[in-house]
Amino acid sequence: MLAFFQKYLARFDVEAILMNLISIVILYLLFLVLRRLIKFIAKKAVQSTGRLSSQDLGRQKTVIRLVENILQYTLVFLFIYCILAICGLPVSSLLAGAGIAGVAIGLGAQGFLSDLVNGFFILIERQFDVGDSVRLTNGPITVSGKVVSVGIRTTQIRDADGTLHFIPNRNILVVSNKSRGDMRVQIDLPLPSRVDLNLVTSLIETVNQERLPQYEAIKNCLILGPQTTETGQFSYRIHLFVTNGQQSQVYHDFYGYYQQAFVEAGLELGTTH
Image (cartoon, rainbow, N blue to C red; front, side, top):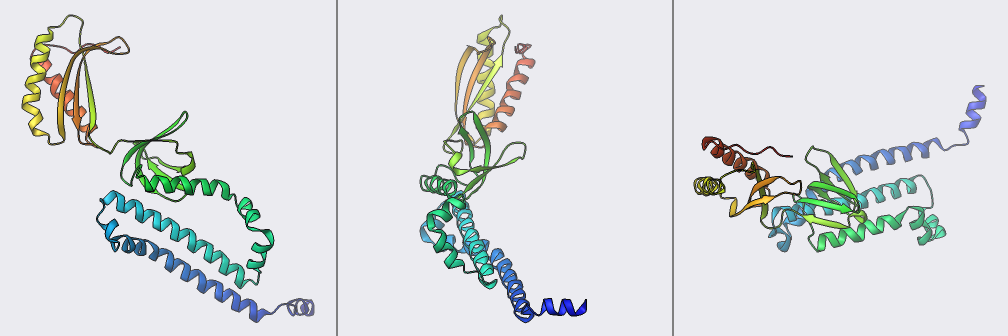
């Protein structure tokens, strides 16, 4: 039995196999080191570019993530190529024999190229940057949240409950960016059908005079007055125009201020349908 194994092992060049394994281990360690350095290299590359260094922080983060993504894909490709070369496989001959078109189709590059092209235009047109609050739409599918990363293949969006969505760039058809310019906060105060509208208007104006100067984020206020909502609810509508990102806080604060003023004046908000 021992002679059988010795004869079987004699067919292999054990020394060459060990050298290949050592080379693969060293290559893997080098791969890990370079992978950790990619983030530092991408950040330095962006900061050293005069035009990019003068951009806002969100734009810089977007370009840094994109450069990281490109470098990581390139590094993985080179790593796989070197592993195959160490194992003695004729990588160049295989690629040439299969043909570029055949390799592209075999790797599913058609979808990848679509992601790349769409991601390129998203970046060039500045449709959104890292940190922007957006709504991405593809037919009936809608994803809303904050942009975490913009890659050459996918965009990462984290929604309000913390879920992280990975969206292929080719599936992004409509982009609604909520972080460009001032945003509108709409407050509808439900009212009973029999209410003194003059008193309501006076209370709202009093609250605005007292509270608006305390909020630098509020750029303008427009009192629209009594309205009927889509559900048939009689209400009083106020529009506040605020710096993007402050909509939720301003809405909750001012709804509370108005409600408190109504209670102190002896008025009750109506019951919503």
